[in-house]
Length: 74
Image (tube, rainbow, N blue to C red):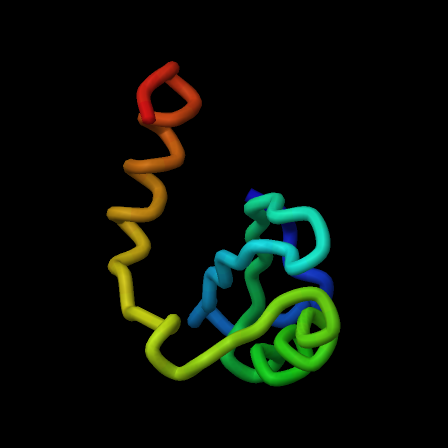
């Protein structure tokens, strides 16, 4: 997981997964709610976004998936 490009003390975090248009590589970035729009503006030249792409996922589920991936699972 990458670190947020805009440091902020907001505890709400959006984790944005996207695929680069030119390379097809999967990537992710995160940002607090206050900086989400800035992050999407930064990424818009690289990827396309739509409202249907955004989902609310409990942070515990995200962290469990990260731990499983680090332990060799997928």
